[in-house]
Length: 375
Image (cartoon, rainbow, N blue to C red; front, side, top):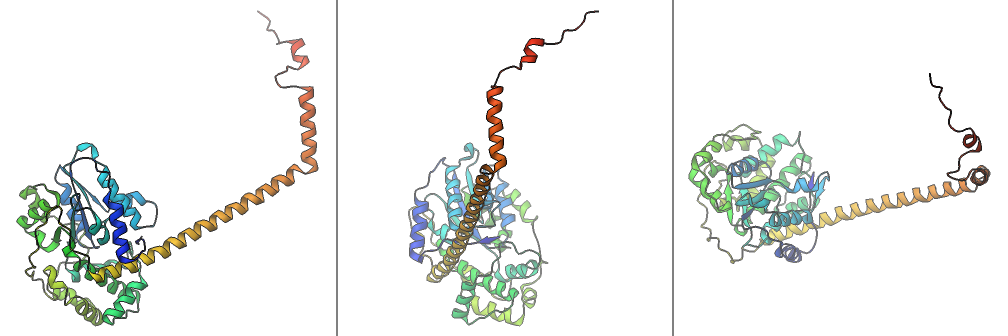
């Protein structure tokens, strides 16, 4: 399955998203939240944890249910999903309703601050990349190699990946960099590794949902992880799983940005993160980084191409249907003009004159129904 976004110029796209999300049909007074994340970041576990509270309902990529059975979805699908989150109050059964994984950074930045709390879920990039390399050969869901992303990577870092696995590695690195550079645009930054601390975890859940989660329940979830696809080893051991080229690319692309979100390049040590300004209603989020806007433009261009191809395919199918209808009309006209059809029409008219509809044959009316002899 492929993700793609609608194409416009960068600033126009942000304005278009804001226009599409500014006038939401709000129902209910419950808290709403959206979390952006990449694959293999612990989102399944986070959603289970959020749903452990009886007053919280959280989708896990809920947009997928709306687009099934389509194989891809666009920015418009995500916007419609966010609108449904704003509209559906679920009969007042919950105090907080949200989603993890459906919204991309552009949507996260565009939703009204006073209506949605927004977050980014992070996991150490080396571990996400390691999981991707282990899983990719068997599961290529939500994966498409985007030439424009590879081109930007080559232009900015001089990196040229040739084989499919390296291209996936570099593309994921690019997305990770864009995500890190956008951490100041959201209300809550969730680091999976720090969620092992009950107090930190409860605080994050409170910020995201506005609801206090019971520490004993949180502790239970901390000791019950899900979807572990790779062995838990040291970060040094993870890096050794990469090829020498992949390690060089990893260092080149992340060395300047990774410490911003509290991760070290080559160790499991969690660093102190810069102090974030408190979130307050009515205060605009920080602007998206210039690099992300350029990346967003490339993604949107790709979506326009995909949409044009889909429109062309549908037009071709319509033309094929028209040709079939025209052919069938010709066959029908040929049948109606044939000698056999004309003879059949003559016989039908004769029959109507001899036996009008509803009239009973003479033999039956004279003879009447056959009587039964009584014993």
